[in-house]
Image 1 (cartoon, rainbow, N blue to C red):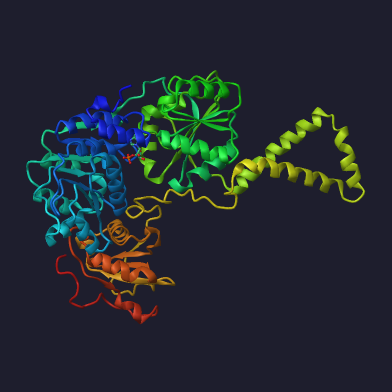
Image 2: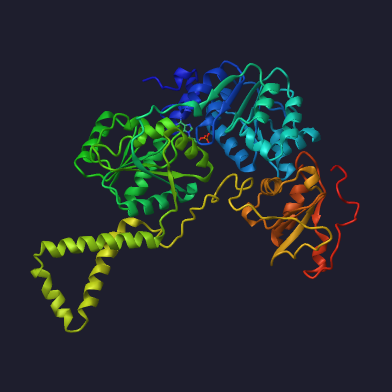
Length: 580
Ligand code: AMP
């Protein structure tokens, strides 16, 4: 059987890696982007995170590596990404996809010691994945050299611009050889991105996955709910949702075979009647699972898209997307399996915070609302289970035939209140039915969209409030345990709170949610930070550029004057950045 990845022109070594990763077929962006990139063309791709875009550029670029050894500090491929989290993720993905070709990948980002990065660069890397500020720093120090670059990728270009990296990107592209391949990916295509593409891409192939249309009438009427949860919380969140929804029969879709197997095993271990269905199984194995599904021996069928194709099960009550599917069409296709024969279907999607945009794309295409809900709490699940217990009790009472049990109640009735006896019986049934719910009973599952957002640094859910220091008025004292830092650029330099949050979180690696109030004055900004991270942040910011400039960063001296500091004007110290 030839792999659908082979049809795109990928060689057998990479295809073998993909099979091992459990990928069954290319996602739409991969189908569109891989052939032109393999042909050496430039590419302008509009695709959000979660569409499989990393593999869409990593696979063809790795395929094009010649086997030549990279020289110290001179990579062949440079990928620019907006945040350190993304640098790590993309480097990790490149490593996975490039394993068959023994591609060495080095992530380079702010907040990490230069020494370590320099050592890794010296060893020679085929691929460098970098945040723009840090890449430029290395370029200036001479520890990174772009002379041997054959390909440059700008990943999440809109995010990079939002974070103020425009100048760095320009400088980097100007330092790269003109004879090179360039790919630009962006979730949105505002004019600023189009301008960069115009300047730096040559006759690019254009790929726009969002254009895909779901034919009218194809979208079934289904109750659609999404829960935003971090990767680590997906399994417990799924458990709660399943307990709340108590589906008759659900198909749970995963992206890869590996994930299908993992989830089927995990759910089975938690007491659910769950089985796997994917393309790596023999026809006979699949037939057996389908038979058990139809006979009612299975409640949860965990499947890949490929394996579930053509699946037609009358009893299906729920479709669950363990991940947001890689295209709106795939979503429509999946949820079309429920809600048949006039019954209401339910589609549930577990989305990671960074996949929010994919949900919006789907809503736009289907013109239907996806309700964003919070993960049920232990109390919700408990209430629901009690409701089920009550319903079962009512049925049992109506069904009668209780004589064999009455004597137990009677014997206890002399000693205890009959209501207590009944309540204890309910407790026992309840405890029994809770068996499947797993061990996460007491853990709260954070369902906020900020949880584990790899871009929390750039766009925290609750933006810190921007306060405007007015004239000679003293800014209020920092909160308990918080310290203010002074950054030598303000409104005149177009500094926005998001620039500061982005720089701090990405360069120093601290959690953006820990950042306190931000004040932006004309020529400087003040940022409140937890005392324990202040030195780390100052060191990180001093080692990088913000909005393309190296700025003065230090503890705000006003702090020592205490909360009742007299009115003051901004420091007359000459340490303010003269570059504003
Ligand atoms: P990305 O949009 O690059 O962040 O990828 C999103 C997720 O999809 C990652 O977890 C990848 O491992 C996964 N993925 C990428 N391509 C495929 C594919 N063809 N089949 C299954 N999963 C994939």
